[in-house]
Length: 334
Ligand SMILES: Nc1nc2c(ncn2[C@@H]2O[C@H](COP(=O)(O)OP(=O)(O)OP(=O)(O)O)[C@@H](O)[C@H]2O)c(=O)[nH]1
Ligand SMILES: [Mg+2]
Image 1 (spheres, rainbow, N blue to C red):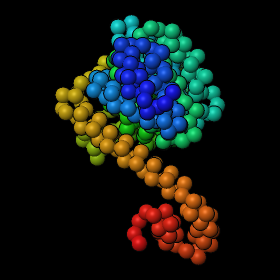
Image 2 (image 1 turned 30 degrees about the vertical axis):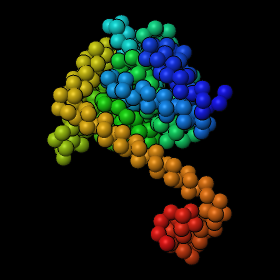
Image 3 (image 1 turned 180 degrees about the horizontal axis):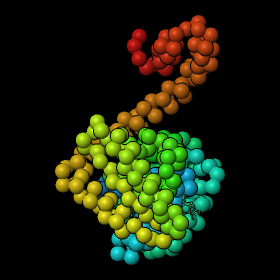
Image 4 (image 1 turned 60 degrees about the horizontal axis):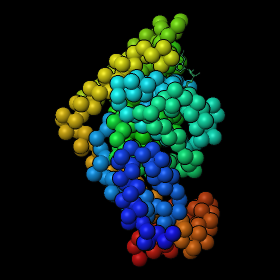
């Protein structure tokens, strides 16, 4: 099929099907977005443009935390609770390191097994990404598709040990960090950078004989946040304890998320935040393209290793070498 011709009406049909709630069409569109083929990318972008007016009417929530904190279990239960209320829930994941042991794609599929079988839920594991940039582009665009398909809530899971949590915080409205019981030592395990992204911290596994420890951990988080927030009057994250396993505290968690979202919406902060995110996203894609074109240039490719060697040996300064490569690629002055 020639992409040039058949495409217009095809795309219109696809868009209509997605808006109409056709899950197969939605899945197909996501596959198109994930495709690396240039002609698929063109179609994907056209489809997204058609659907753009239908996007944005959701609550976008990022869920992060150390490996094994219970993110998937929490999303499964929270998702079930929401679906029971008639809310349509889409779950996505950002995981550029899908070889990570114990978690990731297969694990998430089975851990969200109950939610996966719900009609009102849509779960899409993250693609086997080779770069964070690629996976986040896919995830952002998949959020847009899910919104056009009528999902009310989008939950994005990511593990909080790399850069993916920052990437996810830049595509959601409210960011939840899942913590675990245990004071002091375990708190150190959570990067300060992760805490700084949080709107809500849910200390999970507050069940059985861990309730006491979970409460203590919550206290420690409050203290830590108090110190971190000292210079920032606009930031005051909430801390609560939950058990994803026993489904306790999750209603309170969701209420907090909704409150945050509503406050953002009321203040105009939501529109501003999303606009800022969209522009940052444009910049990011442009930089990626630029870098790819730059490195793809034959002349640059030929001279890259030589420049690296010269910089390593101190024969050239990094700036001079970068500028030289830039000139070879036709970027930059002179
Ligand atoms: N006791 C208890 N165990 C839990 C709870 N939530 C999750 N777990 C257990 O913690 C382990 C990890 O749960 P996951 O939901 O896979 O955690 P995750 O944060 O998604 O893990 P990764 O995706 O690998 O980073 C599993 O054995 C769960 O059964 C909880 O509320 N209470
Ligand atoms: Mg998980």
